[in-house]
Length: 206
Image 1 (cartoon, rainbow, N blue to C red):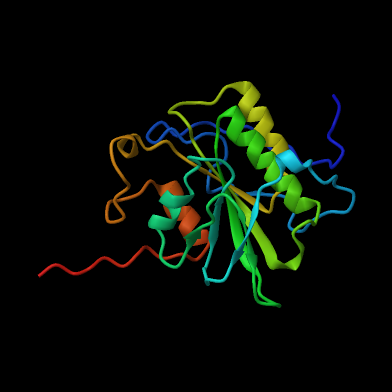
Image 2: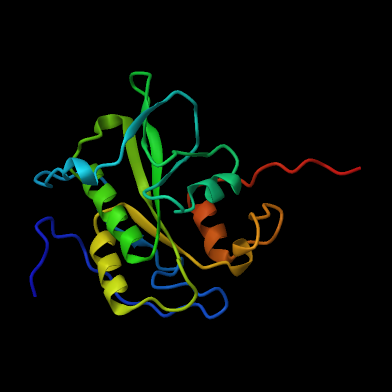
């Protein structure tokens, strides 16, 4: 079996969570991969690169959805002090500032491919010291276990980013926006705990 040029790691298969349809990685067994850009990683072609935008606002975490509908706005709405990136790398405008970024993608083929391109762009050291990649969030695009071809593609990607979190399909969110005051699946809570994030403040009711 051939291996990719950058030798990204391959992880073990995981069973699904029947309650929330969580695929592959479980939060009690976090996935870890490359923590810094690596020499020799080829720069992606221009068509596969994400745009860049100057970001002057502070944020605890910048959620970077690598494609439309990835879920970056949802994650930002659920956590205080974080911001969505509007599908572009947030480049600091102040010298010496570093933005902590988490990639976000859906787990269909197109979403995983976009995540791979973004991870490769970071790994090739194109972004310099202004962006620190904290990891990749993969949000289920459908309930149930993913097909083998998608699990294989995920295994290729996860070794090339510092950490991967798998979040389950939440059926209620098809019908309306997420309720920040409602209980979240444990995978979301684990993600926010790992990143030291707090829920948004809720106005008190008299």
